[in-house]
Image (cartoon, rainbow, N blue to C red):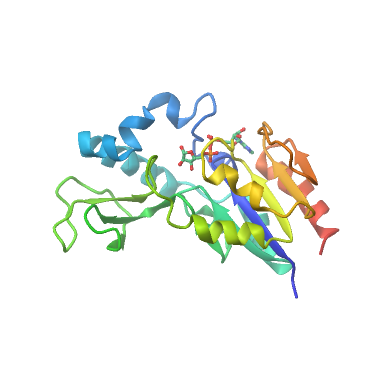
Length: 229
Ligand code: APR
């Protein structure tokens, strides 16, 4: 039986693929007001602006490629039952070959009716104002905005709680409930965190920090993990 390796990723793992993070100095929230483009209020006020913001994100993701951090994570499936919980809306984990990926904050290549959130459809190109679902509802990105519930949270909590090893890569751990997932990892299991700037955590036992960019940090993580097979 393979051990269960659970990995929580954030924007930092895709930074070296050319996708901007949110809170770094040139991050997305420097150029946009989060209230305008990532809340239900922003959507009600100016849906065209919100659609434009995510149309740009979709184009960026389409043009990006997985980096070696995504690829090394996918290769870990050889040794571990590897389950990824990502806050990222890109599909770079899947394109790198990971087969168990939970998207806590939604997916840029999906859209849904604003009236019925069970009507979800694939989308590769832009969404326009006036594009409607079969129920007549305007189509919106399938993204979890601030102030919205996180439908996959309970699944993520269960995954972290049952992990034999827990890894965090490239997240500032500032957005809840995702940032609180670390508290569900059992105290005795090994935990690793890779980040250019290690985020603050309190009272977490058995936590080993690798302060490096994701691609470089993954090499060190791999050496550490192979001791735990
Ligand atoms: N390698 C590793 N870590 C990096 C790299 C890199 N090359 N570049 C940046 N980082 C780190 C930063 O130091 C920071 O800790 O990635 C983290 C990015 O943090 P955020 O921009 O806050 O992104 P994230 O934590 O994923 O944001 C969480 O906030 O806006 C919402 O819904 C959005 O899912 C997102 C959530």
